[in-house]
Image (tube, rainbow, N blue to C red):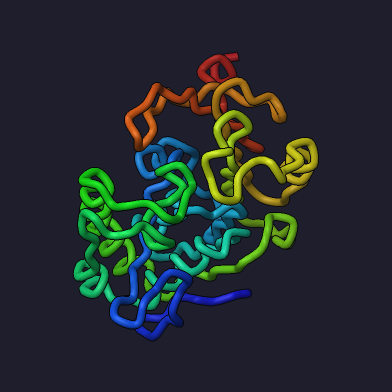
Length: 248
């Protein structure tokens, strides 16, 4: 399934919607790259492909920064795809009008990945606060990206090998079970081989003690839940030269 951004349109009802209220969808995933996006290598190409899109914070950051950037997002989770379709069909003003109230039932539209991966929970104060805090960010993002986003439902193997900037942020080996479509179905050895053979610039992220690529330490990052720090890792196909490289 493939779709592109449209300034404004209608979106079919989603699972969990009712006749009286169509629920908006937002992102705030555990592991979200919102605070880390500008700490990775900037894109060397004007197309970014995220084959494990989630909330696609790397692509969104650079699309806000540069008007020449376009992106292609793949995700195997239909809820993530519907989340993107809903957001891209709305105007920034409509996004700011979306609401969630304490006591509402959490379904697709609230970050179920961040709250244990269960789609049927009751909104508490924290969920409602996170939702409200996310709205301005997504309204600004929607205004910035225009028609430059393509959404494709499918896994990473469906992405053609083209010369672009690849930002590969899969569910982590140690923590990816938190997602609805998590790490249990991923062959990390096969993913490593796939990542190593991409044309263009490739950035792969992980955390903890992952060793399926020769990762380097990147940052220590606290999760959106405020839990213990995660040791973020990164692998670059074209690493930047170190000071020692420059003087040798």
